[in-house]
Length: 185
Image (cartoon, rainbow, N blue to C red; front, side, top):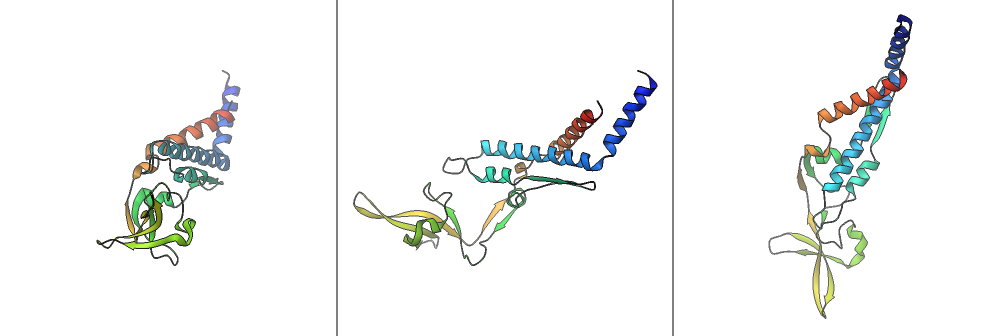
């Protein structure tokens, strides 16, 4: 290979690497794709306690977005991921006094408001509170327990909800390499 060809190739490499906006864009997209595929993988393994696939991870995948310019590259995602990653206490928001924890397939994925005014608060002899609905089964009135009411819950952190540091580094390096290969041919 002649010196002129080598110099032209080196110039292409320099130009491609110095275009910070383009480099940051491909790196951000590479990380976005990594996070989305990781969420899909977690979703395929994780079922709710009723054996159904949760819609949580699909929503989280849809909300992953990459951003970049000449100065930065980053990926944003729903803050619920931070709650899962770090853990912590969850309390009701606004004027609500309780969190509603679904206890049946019928109530999973639905707010208590879905059931309308038919819900009543039932307090057990241990002091636990539930939202129940009176129904008839075999001609008898029975209470159907739909939600457990909690003033707060504490969730343990789970580092597996995000890719590892090594996976992030690999995704960035591969995205950069593909960009350089495409620009220096």
